[in-house]
Length: 289
Image 1 (spheres, rainbow, N blue to C red):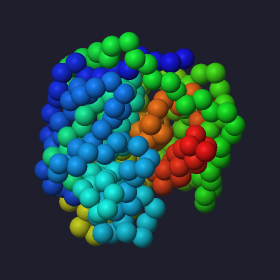
Image 2: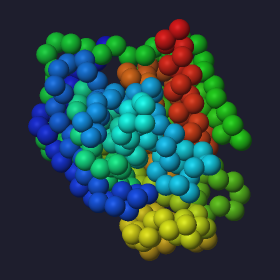
Image 3: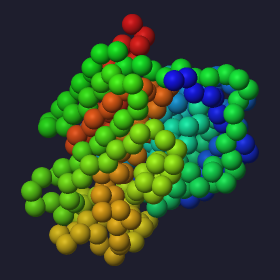
């Protein structure tokens, strides 16, 4: 089950605005400097791996200082530079099967685009993916079940001979966001066609609360999926279960912080970034023991 190590065939540069900062944001993604380096971020002259050890608790906005993580932030230790909202890029790299790449973040937050991973998958696919010599990456083989849960949400990672990621979304009775289930078998085609296009979303009440705190003023419901009582406002779903697919996208990106592909069955129910970070920490603790 070892996989060939791969990287981009050519560099790409992506520009836009940050989701939480609203500021101009840009990032360059380049072929790996050498096989085996993994996904490496560069920011302000500092280099750090896109792995669990680099997770940062620094919030993307002061309003989130006392809340569970609303995104994924990576950074160097000792108060070094940080990069916010990396989850969609990490999901794109994992979904495309890219094991090694250099990510040069030019701003403190990565571009958000339309809230999907297509901002990254499209240019990377256009640039092409190439194999790195004859080296391979050994997946993480789940030997015994791992489970984390909090406030009705849970993530279970179980042994399996294949790759199976499942996300079950349920906001409860009366929610304008319908329950849904999305899954991924680890294939590039399934990710590109059915997961990468799924956009981030929120409820109208959440959007209004964020606006009151000075957040997301650069966005409208046409730019992001905002669910009102009757469904999406000024927008149309790309999939009937698009919210579940986007949650799966986030799950794939955050689980890539384990450092290697996971060979196992992952079932996430009503979970978010904070619980996935905890699950990755538990998995890494088992691997490193």
